[in-house]
Length: 230
Image (cartoon, rainbow, N blue to C red; front, side):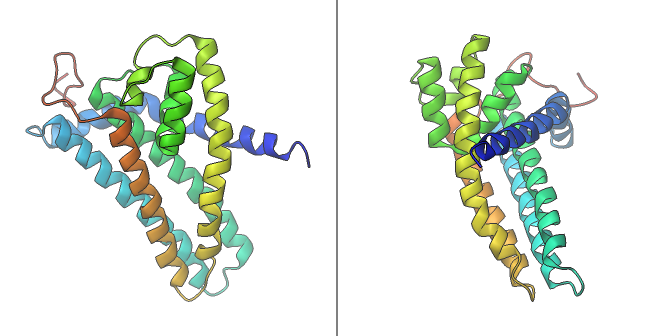
């Protein structure tokens, strides 16, 4: 039993890394498509669209998983399996959202360890901020900026180890209550799942605003161009 927390942390790190690798190369294209669809939008408006898309996605996934408990013939084992897939989707959505906001702010997302630190610290919020500030020695008001420069690789690795450990504890605690709620039958689970996911999603949106600060007033030279115009 002593090695169980280590296995949980390793699994969470693997899941987050998969999300980061999958989403990282697509982030700029995602933002470029949004800009192409809304060419007159300011950076602030594009961030608002990223926020609304993220909340819609995680709310819908939570409701869909909760609804499985109301379907005749779908048992608890199947519901738990669906929750596992939904948790992976939630983390991937959080990664895409966080890295999308970073791209709008001009925070580079090329480095694998940096992507992990950004995603974890935003999901964790204040706890993530404290870990980033302690590791980098930078007490910036918007802690994502502490990851904007050249952070030595050993510092990033140590920081991410701390972030993963904190994430394993905090995320598991917050999600455990939702897991039980989503298994309630007769459609109640769907409402709990959707509302619960939306509440967590809103906290991540608030965290991202704290982490990155206000969006740039205008698109700077060298910023992501609308797709097709780059």
